[in-house]
Length: 106
Image (cartoon, rainbow, N blue to C red):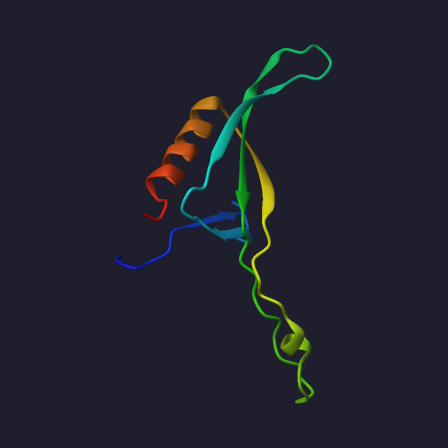
């Protein structure tokens, strides 16, 4: 779809509730690291993907009493958040990194 913005959306598998909705941006970098057992220092089977995202925020709904809602004070300026996603394996982490890289805006 031309002109569409690529987004990263994470949902809970059981309820489908959106946990994260963030736009991908030009120059976005992702880092992968393999989790480590803090007690033994051994590499774990899980991997972590770290990236800086700007989660989208929705305006609050208007007040039900008909008066001006507090949404007039809502600031929708994007705020950067360092995000760490724990995934099941190093292979899944690499697939996620590749999918993000392939969908970044030009």
